[in-house]
Length: 181
Image 1 (spheres, one colour):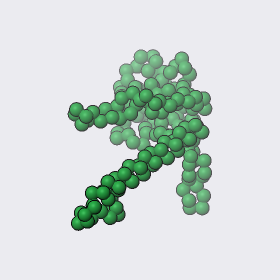
Image 2: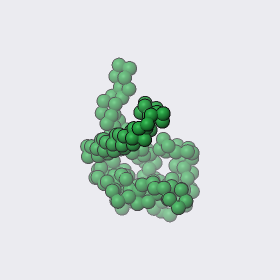
Image 3: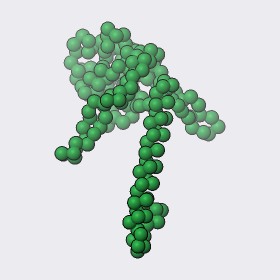
Image 4: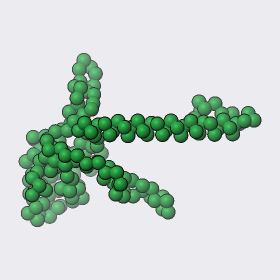
């Protein structure tokens, strides 16, 4: 409940008011969840970006910044020509059997940017594994592949495969060939 729900335990019917407030919040949350899902679905269907910007891509707004106003979305991704050769080299090194730690050192030395939520600037073996497994580099985008669920027995969170995975062909995002990927 919220402060502005105006529930006073001094009143005789405070429990009824509390139940009404809880029902109203549940309904509001349900409608908000539907609006958010509808907006993300519409962005997905138009080919707009709905997740983090991956290395090797640039994100451009559909409405550029003008007259002191910031750029506005929806935002669309495209291949960043500055990083094409580095990404192809990473895929080739992995394909030739180079150790992942060496490929990670190469990516770090080339200053390949990571996603904005990265905790470290340096590339690791785990980052390289995730990068080479990402289908976006071969022109196929996936979203909602896994979801985070709380394990009731331990209280910890764990990623599990999602039943509602979205997929779309994005040939303009292709950097590597199917054979190399």
